[in-house]
Length: 159
Image 1: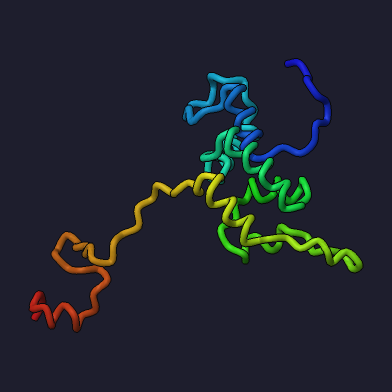
Image 2 (image 1 turned 60 degrees about the horizontal axis):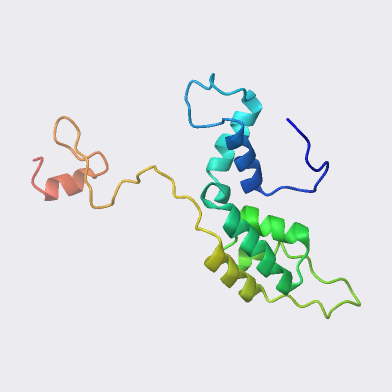
């Protein structure tokens, strides 16, 4: 591997995920094909569950360029890309407050949130299905496990 630019700065989660993909990391369950360390697979698995898994290089670069208009620091831009806040409550801890004497640094947080919504893809959804409240399960003997004895009696299932 050739070092192109030593210590080029902090990377976004997307860039780390892209790097691991370029080295051969995948959802391969055997994990013996690619020369990836176990710790790198743990990082890869974690990043697949974050905003990085749905981002593209184009969306990340476009977002970073547009954020320069908001006068936010590079570290703040990096954290916004990595965390993809969707509300002011999530964004506020990322943006550093202006120190005393520099109150002219007013950040348009609503504008940043709109930019996040427009340029960064939504967070990945989990593939686990949650049981619907209308779906009623029955045990082998026809009873509803979550129903009380009174409900079953009212339904006429048990006397």
